[in-house]
Amino acid sequence: MSEKEEKQIIRKATLNLRRKYGRTKQINIVERDAFIPKNLEKEIKESILKRKSILATDIALRYDIRVSTIKLLLKQYEEEGLIRLLDPSLKLKIYVPSSK
Image 1 (cartoon, rainbow, N blue to C red):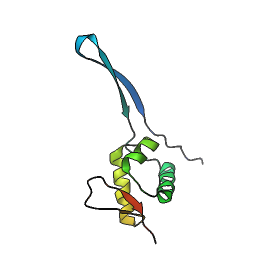
Image 2 (cartoon, rainbow, N blue to C red):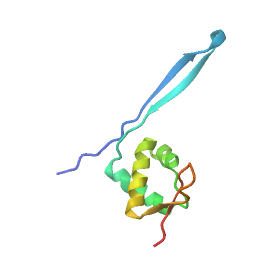
Image 3 (cartoon, rainbow, N blue to C red):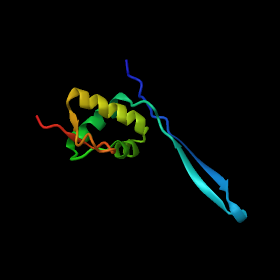
Image 4 (cartoon, helix red, strand yellow):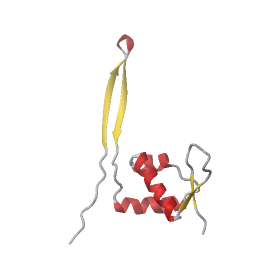
């Protein structure tokens, strides 16, 4: 039996917004997947452990996954002890790999 390949859902759309005096502005809307496929999760885990610092937005943009989903994954890795929060007092959460 062969396993089904899990695919990510990424929808992209461009909207034209009307502005004053006949001008228009184009906005790109990207709808990213809320779930992480298992094979991609392994790849993310390996790349996180090689980095010096980890930001949720960097990983989300690189793998086209929602930032909220990556935040949950990073929190899970923190509970497992793979990564730790650099400074809890900062508003921007920066994680670093924990040294064992």
